[in-house]
Length: 91
Image (cartoon, rainbow, N blue to C red; front, side, top):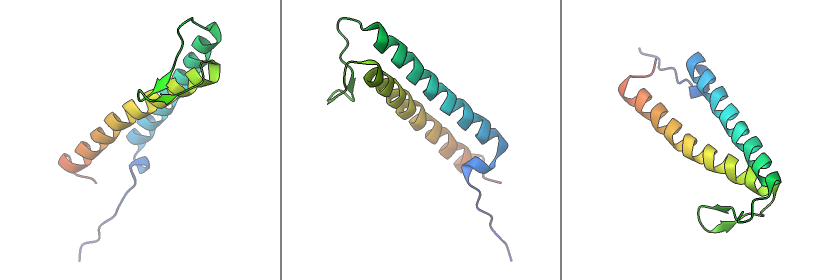
């Protein structure tokens, strides 16, 4: 009989490092958005996905930066995890 063991992606050490770096990059994007929002440029008008208006202040730009980076990198990271599990085989 063959037992199959299902592992979550967070169970592998390399994946933990990648997820930590992902969270760190998203946090840095939020901090940079907050700093840029405090500078108050003239034409600051953050729009998420081109149609969701965010407030033109420090918190709005921080949210914009965090969500944009999180979704963009999250899609790519998800594709890499999918492809690596599919073609390299999961242990």
